[in-house]
Image 1 (cartoon, rainbow, N blue to C red):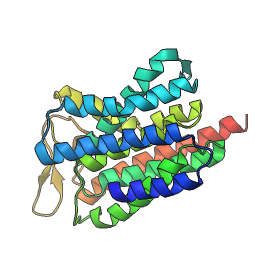
Image 2 (image 1 turned 60 degrees about the vertical axis):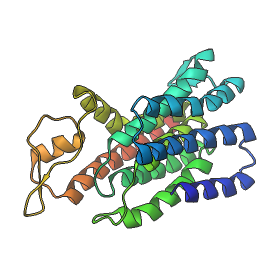
Image 3 (image 1 turned 120 degrees about the vertical axis):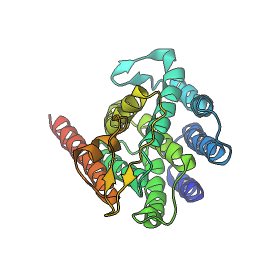
Length: 266
């Protein structure tokens, strides 16, 4: 997935004459840096602190580039020089939040696809197409991955995919217009809720449930994940839990597009 994304992004960069090379290079460094950190974790199970520190360092160049180009508005506020730190913090948070809401066949890849489709549609509506050279190759790579990762999965993502996807979507929102950053943040609401729930258990909880003989899932412990909440409300099969979360993200995308349309028309 990482190789396919990198090739697609590099090919698009040839035609994306409106994207300054510093923006392209720093965004690519942040995304692949997050993926590399995920790969290290998959192979060597690195400590949790490194999954926060290393993506932050890889994202610092993008923060410097955005500050140098005076793109210092974040969520409607002009933060000035704090842009240099807040952008890496946002990318790191998005990468790790995306990593937390995973563990079921097709879940992370499907959520990434839905977010990409929503942001691509939004970019056409707002005329903010700067992030498309990230979103389009990411969408293509995730679609190819989901073909093998859908239920019942033949391959599974590690942190190398989930961290990369979160970082890529955050970068796409950051390098677009200021309003695009706010809309991108909105689509991460399920991941933010997941972060809050995981924080209740000091990030030790897993998303899994007990598989019953009839193929349904059972969870009776403390709710420390959105998947726990869903499996506590009924006896669902794994693909049904994934479909519910996909549906929730699709609803957020629909609300986002309708809201952006209303704002655009006054």
